[in-house]
Length: 437
Ligand code: XLS
Ligand code: NI
Ligand code: NI
Image (cartoon, rainbow, N blue to C red):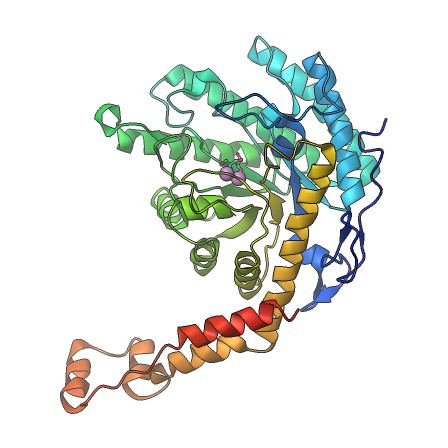
């Protein structure tokens, strides 16, 4: 059974092509700075947006009726598996990602829910074996069901905490069985609505306890995926504890979890936190915490997680610049945590949207590599800090200076001269590089 019958394999046709169902920039086997484009990016399709989402919003029902929808929830779940592998195959992408609740419906009891999962995981496993497609990461959805109204790992209800633990245990087993390369924790309800009824310290202690249990259980079953926390400042809760990269790193360090986790950073979450995506990547990278990316973009005029496909070339260039400078994504990848707009309801839009995101990232990768190879920014940064290469600057950088030696130097060193940062010039050069590749 084919779900995308009218669409063939998406090929690289290069910049001159006017075929909307072809890549103009993403040439998987093209070598950039010693690695193929495919190896740099390790693209993944997000199951929830592409196969489970319907285009509903708080004001209206779903607009996209998919060929894999059936009246029976398990029939739909099985059909989605087929659609997923056909989609990955036609786009030529290596990875996918899912939440437990994306792939199989909840049953009346935890036992029944787990049985539903077993049926679908078996199917996924078969398809992965024959297609060679891989799981970049899986995760547990502990935010949709009403039981998580007050949180999962940070709930005020011990029964819900126990349920979350059971759900997490099952998810780790699924990750192990499908060979997930990473395992993600995104705490949609791990935060608060008002401090007036919240014991913040206790909730954070409990959350850390759940993470320690996850580490212990993964060790027990030999699941060696990289654990990732995905920061997000708000939405659905008013304040989320994993606010941004810096906050999450401090949390991991406080609870002795930093050697077991890295970060899964998302562009739209960065802007919700008042940061650029490249800021979040830099913060993670300098702390050895860069794990994986959720690629999308927000609308800066809107204060919520619109999860648009990434098409902003400045953002994709600076994202890939940070990734290249950090030495790559390692076990991570670029997952399209992005959904087609409500008005883009045809199945073909799923392809067009992914092509837009993939080509924008490929373009960004090429521009970023050029910035590095031509030493455009490195030269600027080296010159900017050159006063630390000798004399008092070298003493400071070597940790040899004291307030006595600084005073001694400052007293006889007048006047102080600063130099221009030249940022307008640098931004114009960035324009030129982006549009030259
Ligand atoms: C929601 C998050 C979510 C995570 C996985 O905003 O981005 O989709 O990526 O739970
Ligand atoms: Ni995400
Ligand atoms: Ni998100």
